[in-house]
Length: 383
Image (cartoon, rainbow, N blue to C red; front, side):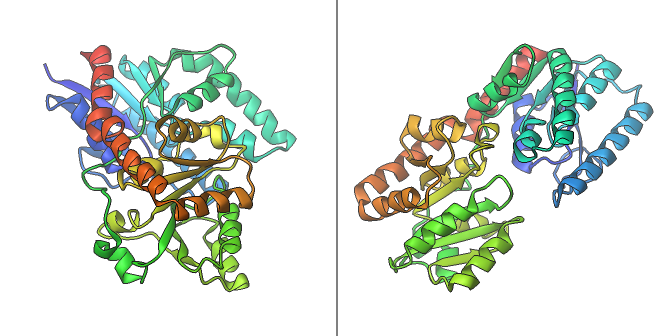
């Protein structure tokens, strides 16, 4: 008899859909409720709007109202498992409602820790009051979920720290697309060639440029290294701090900083592979709440990783455990500049980090490795 699974996520990338689909197997029928444009049997829900906290709250409310109406109209459906992702975080509540409606086990992947993110960003009494209520809800209801997942050991500890009593949290990391993302020589790299970067030592920052990313530290380090003409800082992405970088370049007349918007799907494998060194940055107050997914993509491209954060986050543990790069924990531009300059001047150390990063991505974070972890989980839950 064919099993039937419901996946709920306001935002979900295609690679994750493919990972879950492959892990579930060909004989499982999958419905996906999402606002993302992905392949599969998709039931379109309101999309995600990340422009501001207000826009996020509004789109979360739209998602909830959509799900409430959908559940009411589809009570006769049968599902053998519910799988929800914390995009948005109210999906923990939605998933429990789905579990009750369809009498099916519920697995919840918690990518974004709420209310911890709000607690770290806002410190006014009203925010604290709301977060206390939210933590109380999590303490009562997370234990009703059949299996809670997250993406890192430190993130799991941080989740449990907000609960009155710890729950069983299984860690399944984010996967790296090692077949699509590979090391590319600058002389064969379309992005590097197009922007005249083939003869530069590139320090790359690629991805979101938002509240939880210490962009200012990287800019200050770049300014302090401006006399090293062969070192170029390349920023690629989008977010609220894109304009901060623009303003910094203009104000300081920086010749060693280049800023680009998000690249096309065709150019992306080249743009994210253009660096000698890749920087992954987190604000210290939030570092224990995240594990930036771009880290694995940069590793797949064979880049040495410089992680900005603390000694108590998953990024630090990854870099130090596998020796794939350097860490910056003081939050000082001098330390970051020193780490960059050290790798620029020590080619043997740089090559060692680059080769290890690619090897670790292949052995521990390839799609096939992560799919196997999900397959083992799903076998236990639905057979």
